[in-house]
View (tube, rainbow, N blue to C red):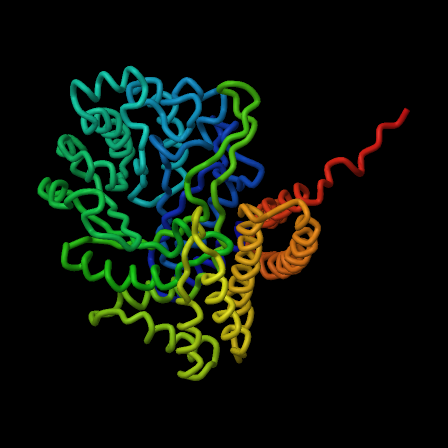
Length: 474
């Protein structure tokens, strides 16, 4: 996101009464002494400073999230840090047994992060370290001392380092909820953040196992999360997440609440140049840009300020009236369209009934004519059209993967596929126009290429197009 897009987002947050932005810069932060990490979209130091200063004028504290255990593919892909990997084929996590080597690198990284952010907090991550106890050294340690000890022996030193910098460490709670035996060794300044995206409150473990040690807790529902992508947004799940989880955080005495918004799954595929040598990493999914989700951001702001139970349908109807100038009846139709049964397409799943429901939702969206904030509504319309287009492709893909598909049917499917591609390309043009200020041009191209990649590949396969169009001059 360009800095101006971030500024626009925090201005909206401030208008809603929100007071904190937790941001995971990843490779967009301009590290000075670790200069191989920043990518092609990295901000300048002056942009970061100016942005944080702007947030301060709006009364918004900017808390950085700097992962240092798992979810650091963007660091471990580089040869400079390859010695820290827990596994040479899955670069998501460093080896917690290499404490001294890791601290040597992350002390400098955290120093730069701390100096750039006046906030009293730094989020040090720590979630989803699924390779815990994977390498031979860690296996032996986990067998002798337990996974909790393996995790805490490393992570508490990161937390202590942050405390010495004058900051309170925020920590995702999932791993220590699952392995709570040595959580008492973590610094008392630690704040645990329980993330819950619509499941049972004890999914990772019982909160009491950590809370009995008098640690502070924050909560974290989601604005977008797995399996959301360009062609799927589980609106009802996210609204219900606010409805169900926020009362729990109040009853549990949580001191803070944040709304997470993940633009990828945090999982990556790799293109290898050689064993252990990475050419590129690719996110396993991408999500529609943030401005389309303003309705959920305002729902969050509204819900946390209400003593009464949050009722999603009532909120959407009110939002449709106040934001889009629709009638109460039309607001109800918008709710019905957004909450059409949205499910991810899994292997073996029949596409036709899902496509039928999505077409019905699109018919409703197409009839609604907003009187205000038309651009925001156009995002919702485009997302629905994109889903229908995607499902039409998935239905065709299902057909060509059936036992009934024969070569004699191939040319017919090529014609059908070309029609789907033509619509998809028009949708991409609208996507580019709507989001030209929300993402850098290079990122926009990556997003649109990603959306059409599988469709184009199948078309090449069925059309047998690889044999033509290439000439070697004599």
